[in-house]
Image (cartoon, rainbow, N blue to C red; front, side, top):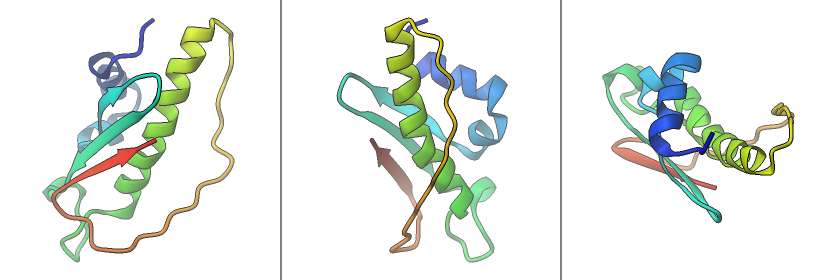
Length: 102
């Protein structure tokens, strides 16, 4: 199956509904980069009126996950993925439309 933003977003709706309902969307994917966007809204905000850190984590991880899913599908091999480490540094309040690029 070819990985496209529409297909991957539909996959998220059925298999990763918390990411989909939080507004995480694959925007574009190609050979060199993967872009995921999420818009700050009432459903993904914390009590301090900024985006909840877990939503940002889902979007950031989605960039690498979608990119690897595409490469695995293109290879034709049967490979599974497991996140073994995740590090983040939050430098300012997340509001508006946030873009994550891998």
